[in-house]
Length: 256
Ligand SMILES: Nc1ncnc2c1ncn2[C@@H]1O[C@H](COP(=O)(O)OP(=O)(O)OP(=O)(O)O)[C@@H](O)[C@H]1O
Ligand SMILES: [Mg+2]
Image (cartoon, rainbow, N blue to C red; front, top):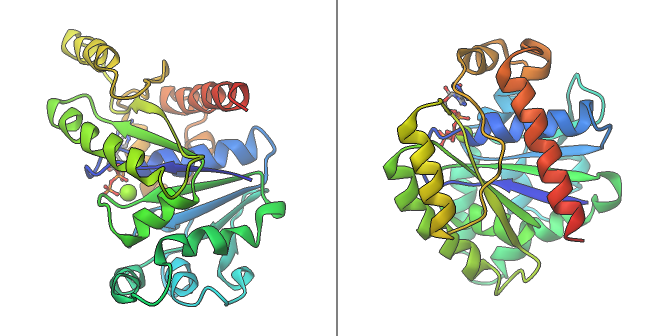
């Protein structure tokens, strides 16, 4: 099982939409067995698959790692795609874990996911816009970090900090790779093209060739609670997310 995390300290950049669609495409188009983990107390990834609410999800697992993980895994309407949900309980869990000095709190998620390693090809983790104890757990449990960014100046300033966080997490997880950043909300404007060149030149992290265009169908898909390849199969965003997954798979497979 390979674990891919979508992280950015900045809010509203497209982490959830990207994680959810990435997971759906791996399952629906590439026939992989995929576990999507909602690592954000806002629970948006759970909502996207109509699973938000009362479910005992990630918070329960982090607080009681001995609990049977299968009790926290929910199936979706899509073959091969299951979800570990989150809701506001994750806020409480994060605070409790942070205060618990008695155990090795950063490795809890890794050991929990270890139980289901043989059952899935990919684990895709959506994250909230912060680096807290849950996010540290995610970095320790991940193989690859993907960073969605919006093409504006503020996004880039946070990127340096994030790259440093990933680098320091390598002390706990030497196999971690900052696979790259990719643009969301992309528009063909000269200022964006220049921003992209700047980022590539900066060497902060690799940049994916595929960008996801700004497309109102994306927001509409969140209201419809349907992944893009179902809701708007022919939209640019659906096509570009499929290209992004293909680009990722080539990169990840060639580095093995
Ligand atoms: N390519 C796109 N084109 C148009 N709208 C988009 C696109 N990608 C995401 N959005 C919209 O932008 C908003 C933010 O997206 P999303 O919720 O995925 O960001 P996020 O990084 O997960 O936010 P948060 O930090 O709050 O978790 C949503 O309303 C979403 O529908
Ligand atoms: Mg989100």
